[in-house]
Every structure is written in C-alpha cells, then in structure tokens.
Image (cartoon, one colour):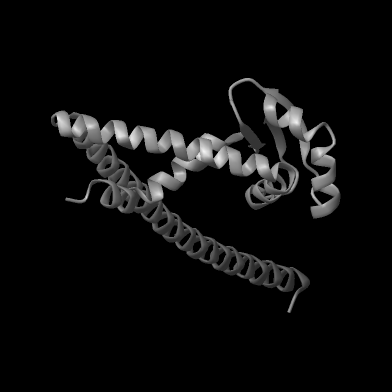
Amino acid sequence: MPLEDILKKIEKEAELKKKRILEEARAKANAQLERAQREIEKEAEQLLSNRKREIELEVQRKIAEARLAGKNEVGKVKYEIWERLRQELIEAFIKKVEAQEEEWCKNFLSEQIINGDEEVWMASREAEILGPDFLNRINAEKGFSLRFGGVTQSLERGFLLKRGGMVVDLSFVSVVEDYIRKNEGKISTLLFEG
C-alpha cells in the first residue's frame, strides 16, 4: 500500500476518533447541564416554598396584631398590655445583661458568629461598658478574628454584625422582639385567656 494511502487512512481514522471524542464530550456536558438545571430548579422551588411559608407566617402575625390593636376598647386595652409587657421584657432583659455584661455579650456574639472574621459595631453604651479590648478578649478566647467597626448611634443597646455585605441586627430590643415573636401564641394565651 502506497504511503499516501496509509497517511489518508490514518487521517481518516484520526478524524473519526476526533468526532467520537467531541460527541462524547458534548453528551457528557449536556448531561451535566441537565443535572445542574434540575438541581437549580429544585433549589429554586425550595427557596420559593420557604419564602412563601415565611410570608404566610408574617401575614398571620400582622393580622393577629391588627385584630389585637383595633377591634374595640378591649382590643385597645389588650394592645396596651402587650406593649407594656414588651417594654418590661426589654427592660428586664437589659438588667439581666448588665448583671453579667461581658460574659453574656461574649456568649451572645459567639453564638452569632459564622466565619469568625466579621466586623462588630457596638452601641455607645456597650462600647463604654465593655471597653476597646472587648473584641480582642473574644478573639483570644474563641479563636476569632473579629474586627471593631466602630460605635453606632443607630442602636440604643447591643451590636451590629457585618458580614459579606449583610448587616445583622443584634440589638437587645431585637433579641426580645424575636423571643416575643417566637412565643406570641403562648404569651397571648396567658395574658388574654377568657
């Protein structure tokens, strides 16, 4: 067989092999793309479902507050009691925190830390009580790399935690309000049953 024919045969076989490899790669890429699309759709459905549940719960909470606040005089009295309880809970909570300020704040912040390198902003009262080395003590004790962002005037008491463009409200008022929100049904039952 002449050399030219052998070269043509080799080129033809190489071309066929190249096409087969490309087809296999396309098929594999398409399968991976389809699998990724299914996963994305599944995650999107889950996120939508979770958000829908959150919105429904928030709507239910708002409806309950509206009913409580507005029906009649009894409703107004109940609402005033509810607000007074909220304020008293906030005051009691702050007193409890002040009794063991540094230890409580260390534990509280540590529970909220995700990466360990967040930026912490303090309400002026916390900055005054805890001092400038507070974060250094937490970092040394817990192995974090927290950074002091400064003193914020937007909070009366507590902290703001900044991570990845997000700001997490760790004010003492928000902690109490979160507790009330989680236990709203029980509290209402205890206060207004009968």
